[in-house]
Amino acid sequence: MEICPPPSLNWDDTRIFLAIAREGTLSRAAKRLNLGIATTSRRLERLESALQTRLFTRDQQGYTLTDEGRDLISPAEALEQAGFAFGGATYRNNDEVMGHVRLATAQGLADHLIIPAMPKLIAAHPNLTVEIVTGVSTVNLHRRDADIALRMVRPERGNVSIRRLGTLGFGLYASQDYVNNRKSSDTTSLSFEHDDFIGWSEMQQNLPAAQWLTKMLRGKPCRLITTSLSAQMSAVEAGIGMAILPHFISKKKNLVCVQGDVGCDQTIWLAIHSDLAHSRRVRAVVDFLDMLVSENQPSLSR
Image 1 (cartoon, rainbow, N blue to C red):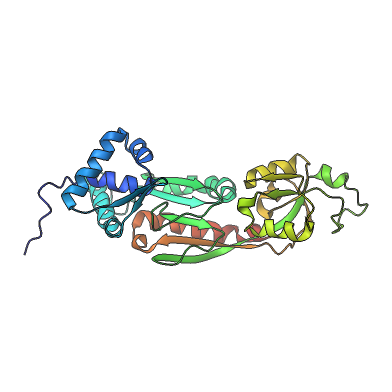
Image 2 (cartoon, helix red, strand yellow):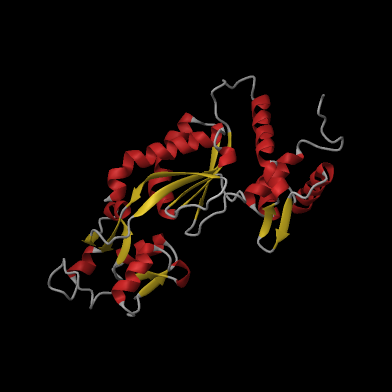
């Protein structure tokens, strides 16, 4: 028996559905598609009407997939890939990877590990577009905030494939000028009574580095508080104080390691939504990240 789509279904509206699922808001989806917000909204309503189901719930944070919408992600992405294949069948070979992959990761990993190596991925897959989303907070793969997450926090359980890629090592670092001017005559002294520190804001007190500082300072306030690793790095370079920083970034910037083992090392986790595990575009980025972390593990960990 032949299964027919609803007579009013416009297949092109699946692009609207995927864009809203990936972006999380109507405005960002419209910008991504180069459409007006009103047009994007009307086309979503048309798709929901044709399917006779609600695909998203709306709230102040944006658009969240319903269970029915989540079930349609894989078929919609298959349709997207089929469209790529149809449109380029006359000049593409069968092994080419195309499409858009959204990668959520930490700013430090993006700036100092992933982006410098991106030319290799681009050369291998010139028709693949990678969108890198950075930040300290975790992302919701079920809500399709991203296709892939590479983070130092183990992702949520559920319909997610999780893999441990390696370890990111941390130490206590300072600038050479700061070390030269330390009040302690011993530059390797682990007594921090007279030292200044750069700490994390209240929102990031769950981070191992923030917890280490809380334990060591015993109520003494930090000299400077920031909400990003890049700001902490800049503060250390400026000689404002010391901070817990990744070894591999700090060594590139010629900072001085005051204490190498502070017990703040973090596992690097890779997570993808299980529905995307066999997507060729996602696999291409996953394999790239796996190789990248493996090749750089010695410098990442110490």
